[in-house]
Length: 200
Image (tube, rainbow, N blue to C red; front, side, top):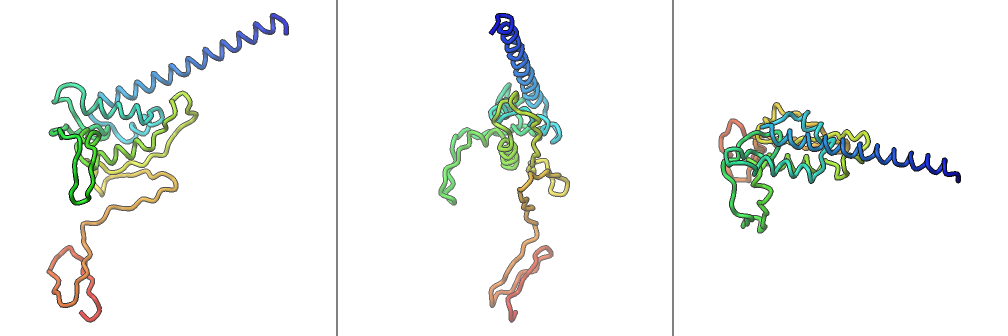
């Protein structure tokens, strides 16, 4: 191999490495831009959060949640879910919650960063759909996200984009269905649908 050919090859390799490092730096800059935006804005739209998902990893999204919920003075604390701008009025001091009914112990270290259970579930659902790969390794990554209803979402107005292959179960109606036992007279109700057993 001639010295000239070897020099050209090394120059080409250095150029490729330089392009790779530039790409990594540009992606990291974009990731940081999204993290700062989600932390600074009180609340964003679903379309904005969907764009951020192209760059965020579960770890970086966790940083967003923590920054929103626990950074600054108490007046600045707000729900960790970027789609919700509700202030955090009360934050549980205890780390664990014991449910006597379910005989289980729940870790509250993450739950306390959200204003409601709905926002906590919606945020967890969003995080699970993020790619753990670094942003610079993602090629044409455009996830089809599913957004769960949160505390500011009404059942009649929320729009959910479902992931392919996932079945969505609609929320239960407030109208209850009651089956009465023999010898029991069903109470009058304008909202209950009553199913009577044969012979009644």
